[in-house]
Length: 123
Image (tube, rainbow, N blue to C red; front, side):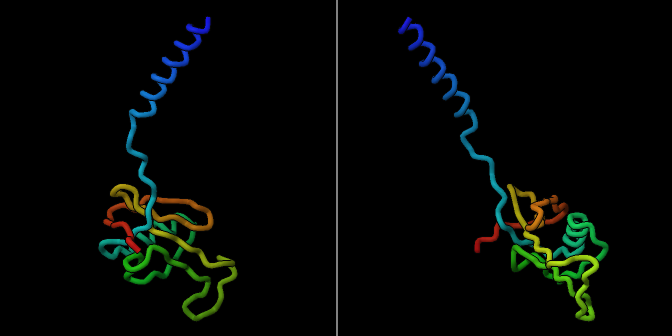
């Protein structure tokens, strides 16, 4: 009986080890990124979708020098817009493989950013 139990343990360990080692490469994680070329239109569209707003005011070089961007709740006349947002929204540009994503920091909602090229932010 002990020999039978020992054989079951040895074969189970062997088969489990085989299952675990079939995928030796870990799944790539999202990493902070920068846009290779500015694309304010694509970024604006993604942000509008993430937080359900009508309008965004972004710099032309958004996500080209920093992986994060903050949208304040101040309008063009420096008047605080308490109707739409109480606190500033922050977003980060991420990359996984060759695909770019924008993530809303507060909700962690993430959307794929299509038709853009980005690279890992080495900073």
